[in-house]
Length: 143
Length: 208
Image (cartoon, rainbow over all chains, first blue to last red):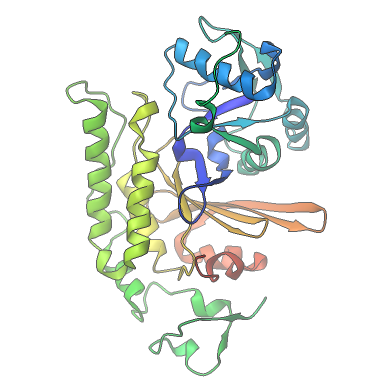
C-alpha cells in the first residue's frame, strides 16, 4: 500500500531538506472521512517505483492535488493489520477504485483517539518514504 | 535520570550556578519565575490571546494562495511579537517550515491552516522547555502545530493544542523492541509527565 502525505505531515532533518519520518497525525481521519485513502501498489503489476509513479498519475487524473514536496509512504498490509491487532482494532483494507484513480483503496478502522496506534502506523508500517519530486523523473509505464 | 552538560550555562538561573552538570529541573522552567528571556515570552503571550482562530476557507472571494498567505502572515506576526527572544536561526526555521506546511500545490478547500491558539501554546512552551535542539515542525488536520525530536532512534512528538494543552507521544528503542507512551497534558506539567523517559535526550543536544 502507498499513502500520499502532504508536506505538513513530513518530519525533516535540521536543514529541512531530507525527509526523516512521518507524523502519526498523517493517519488521522478527517471530519466525515470513513477511511484512510491509500493506493494498492500491486494493482499495476510493475516494479515498485514505476507503480508509485502511476499512482501519482492516477491521483492527478482524478483531480487530486499532489505536491512535489509531498511523499508517498509505503507499507505492507500485514504490518498495518498487525498494528491494529495489537491495539485491539480490526483494521481492514478494501480496494475502492475511482474514476481515474484505479488503484485507490481504503484503510478502515484506524482510531483517531489512539495516538500510539497512529504513531505506530507512521513508524513501523509506513516507514518507507519516497519523495514525489524524485518520482517525477520517471516516465509512467502502462498507465 | 542522566546528567546533562549545558554548553552555555546561564548566569541568572539559580540552579545552574554551582554545578557544571545539571539535572532535569534545570531545564524545566516555571511559569511564575521570570528568570530568563524565555520566561518573558510567557508573560508577553497570554494563553488565550485575542487572536481569532483561523478556520477552514469557506469563502471563495480570495484565491487559495491569497488565503494561505494571510494565514501564514497572521502566524508570523504572532511569532514576531516575541521574536526578540528567539535565536535568529530558530526564527528563520519556524518561518521556513510554516511556508512548507502551507504548500498551495496540494491545498484543498477543507484543509485547515495553522491555528493562532496553537502557535500561542507553542510559543508559551518556550518558557517551559529550554530547547537546545530545534525540532522539525508540522501541522495536523486540525491546524495544530506539531514538533518532532529524534535522539538516535528515540522519537518524541508534541502537538500544541489551544490554551496550553499538549498532546505527546514518544517511542524509545530498547534492545530489539520499542517502548511507546502517549498522553495529553497541560503545558506547566509537561516536563514532569515526560520525566520518566529522560526528555533531556531530545531537548538538550545541540543542532547539528
